[in-house]
Length: 173
Ligand SMILES: Cc1cc2nc3c(=O)[nH]c(=O)nc-3n(C[C@H](O)[C@H](O)[C@H](O)COP(=O)(O)O)c2cc1C
Image 1: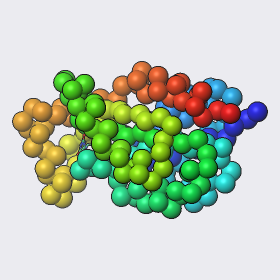
Image 2: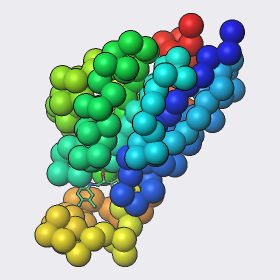
Image 3: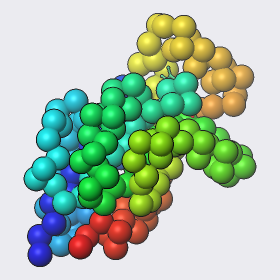
């Protein structure tokens, strides 16, 4: 038995790639061959037994290219074990736990296309020097100035690993 698992991600500034790589590393320690790829480079799922897909959150949504990936691969994803994760800054807040249930709604459009066997919710990172000079990028600076969000890398590698370990039973045949 040597399952082939794809861990695929959509990112704007790299945080979600790091989360995907950590998930991939953990799964590869089980009886699996794991590939970690950006969604934009994935066109065919035929060679994979299971898929883990994750996106950075912007405006309380998966990135548009991540939703497009799900639409393009909806049939293929429904035919194999599928898990989904998101990376956002809300979960870095001191009182994040009170938002955890509510932000599961951000996964609803994903569930509407393909129902994941498991969902992972992770704190990301905010690098003010890398925020775009768009309206949304400027809007992101405001909660930082107000002290609601803190700049920096808030990824919780233990939480990410714990979720990835829980996936082994779900994804490996
Ligand atoms: C324009 C913009 C909008 C964002 N909107 C949200 C949001 O609505 N909720 C949230 O919790 N985080 C939001 N974030 C924070 C990102 O999800 C977080 O910084 C994440 O780690 C970025 O991942 P990436 O480096 O893979 O792109 C936003 C970030 C940016 C730049």
